[in-house]
Figure 1 (cartoon, rainbow, N blue to C red):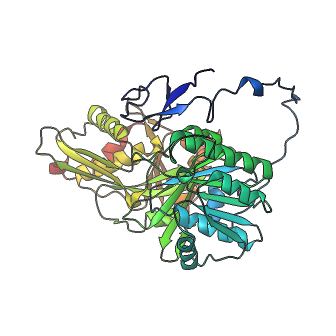
Figure 2 (cartoon, rainbow, N blue to C red):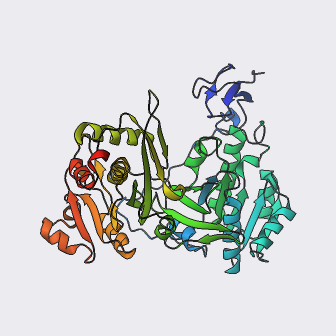
Figure 3 (spheres, rainbow, N blue to C red):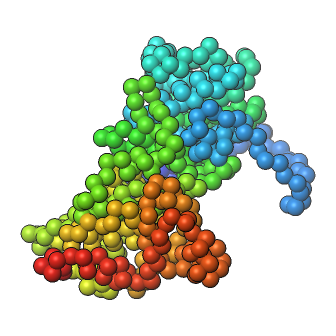
Length: 475
């Protein structure tokens, strides 16, 4: 009789090792290796008796005609924007977020909206009892008769229940870390269990044209817990973000096979659930203090949506040998680069000052186009001069101190004009590159009510701001 082979799988990263050790060689975590039998689980070697010869598949031409993927609107405009226009039947989505951020609330409202349109929905909860889900649905006014509810963690029982009736249009699993299957021998929530459970549910969704939504827990560093292979198995990965001290939530897509990535949907949390925010720029600028130094309005882009947000900076003399550098909502290494450029090319001395940078409203900026706005906020705080109220800033800065145009300049300018701003400070050639014409014609094509101030060097911007400061405040 052949000896049973064993393998050791890391429960943190999914790395497979031939023998046990106290520390995983891939991720460095301690005591995460768990023994699993080699002949069971996903990826196990098939038995010799089950091996068979494959059959040839038909090859088609790459230049053939294609049809747009059919869409099923969820009834929530912000959710449809993030998914690329609605759910695609047969697709699988993974939604992650911090505990209590509103994932179950959002999916409950989406389930009720689809059920109201006559589409059958099944909601399976592995964390809450049926009574708890009913109470939440009643609080959200999302009670619909066309929603099937179950509290179950066995994948085999879930699939048997689904096969006993008509395939639902939407299947929600809350959450994937609570499920377990008999096909593998490991604890629920382990790497192998999460991978095998997700694979079985995705197989059902693809076969029956059901929209599958999996809820995933996140780790302390914000990544979805479990094996990263699950993110590769699904068609879309959405992150639900937000700060505990703020009332709004951001649904961000980081992967989408049927639509654009880096798209966001903005919601406002209230006693009655999540409400859509049609114009997030007004939300992020709602508590703005126009006369305070160190505040600059940045015209950013999230996917296809322009967003205006306030960047706040505080520069104060430091009593420490190593001044503090604190950043909220932006990349700290990017701030270090901007500070170095200001020191080297603009004569702005910040080496003996504490620097605090914050993006208002808990929003997080992911693009380098905020370099110009951050620089303006830092110089304004150091000089003690408030920036012009009706000005917006966007542009990238190089290590030489030159400014670089960024994409979607026209969309940023249109959003600024719509919100009543009168001037935009941007890199030279931004609108000319966008329109493919000379500078004069490009400026004529810009929004008529918006004055464009194009700068080629960061020192030019620093000089404009410092010129308004008192002599004792400069440097």
